[in-house]
Every structure is written in structure tokens, then in C-alpha cells.
Amino acid sequence: MAAKVRRLLLRAGRYYARRGVPEKLRSIVGKNELLEALGAGRSEALRRLPGAVHRMQETLEASQSEAKTTQTPRPRKGRTLSAREMALAHYADQMSFDDELRNFDNRYAQGFFEEDYVAQLRRAVSGAASNHELQKTVGYILLKFETNRNTTAMPGSPEWREIARAVATAELESLSRAVERDEGDYTGKPTTPLLIKTADPTSATARNAEQALARTTNFLSPFGCSKNF
Image 1 (tube, one colour):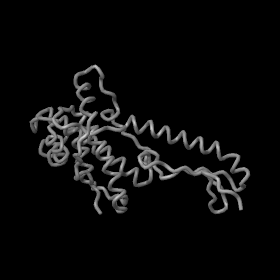
Image 2 (cartoon, helix red, strand yellow):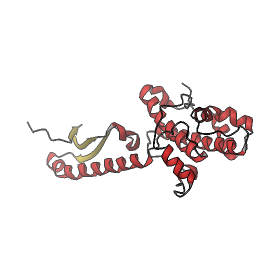
Image 3 (cartoon, helix red, strand yellow):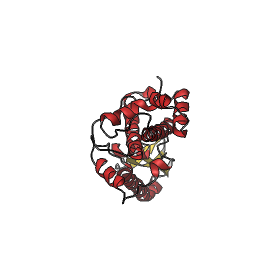
Image 4 (cartoon, helix red, strand yellow):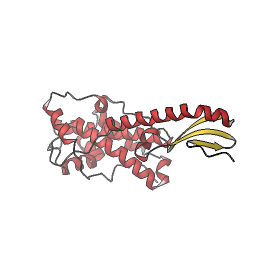
């Protein structure tokens, strides 16, 4: 009987290189394990195994780097944040919440987004929504930042509308990622400049954001799921 070789898997008469994906990287890699076909012959599979394992390790290292650069801690209570900073924080919360729901109940991945809700978010992002519509659509998101004392913007003010539109953008982007994940695609990234443009590191707002986002709170909105079971 041939000795068992680490990272080598025999399945249905064919050999594969196999490498488990750490739990903290699965949302980025999109898989629980990495597999690479090595062929049907054991000798050939053993010859190709080291190269396959090396490529898998490179994939995990790249994912680790991405996890470090894309992670957005939740803002500290009492710190004033800009509209963009609140949008970034909400997007990060929703991505984390999405993972929690998928681990909790398989029915979540069946989709069924509310089309009316998506349409309302698009009106909010475009600026076409009235103050009343904005409050109705993203008021629950604004509430967590108000409770956290991250903003004191008066409802209906230009600053308040800017924040409402920003978090609506983040919510719409998070829904796009959820749809992609329903199909098993975890490679999606934000496409709106609001969530990918780097803030000016010389500005006071950017410095405040860096300090605020360096610390976390345990506040996580339970209202982020817009799917129907």
C-alpha cells in the first residue's frame, strides 16, 4: 500500500493537490479548500505536486494581504465621521453580516431581493429622493451612526442628505456583492469611487477618520438583510 502523501488527494481515480483555506480568508478566496488537478497517474501527480502546492500558497498569501488592506474597522463612538467614512464602515459591516447569515441559515443564499427596496436605494443615490424618502429608505442605517455619535447632521440639511446618499450607495454595493456571493463568486469589489477612492491623507478629515477607524465597537445593525425567506 502506497504511503499517504501530504496535500495529495485521490478522488474518482484522479489525483489532486489539496490545500485548506483558513476560515478568515474564505470570504476572499470564495472556497473552503483549494484543489488543482494533477492527472490520473501517481508518478506524474507526485512530480507536479510541489508546484501546485506552491501556487496555492501564493494564492493564500495574496488573500492574506488583501484581507489586511480591505478590512475596515467599525468607527469609535463619539468620533465625527465624514459621509465617505460612514459609507465605508457600513459596507464593511454589511459584508461581515452577510457572512454571518450564510453561516447561520442556508436559506439566505436563495436570494429574492426586494426590487422596490433596490429602486428606492437608486433614487437615494441619484439625489432624486425627498428627505422623507431618504429617511424611510436609509433612516435605520443613519440611526446607528447617530447612536454612535458619529454625526450631528440635522435631518433635511445638505450635510444630512450627503450622508444619506453615501450610505445608500454603500448599501446598494453590499447588495451587489450578496447577489454575486449567491452564485459562489466572492471576488467582487466596490465599483463606486466613494468606496474605492483614497482620502487625502493631509486633510484633517482623513486624519480623524484614520484614528476613528483604528478602533472598533460592537455595534452591528440587525437591519441590514433585505432578503425575504
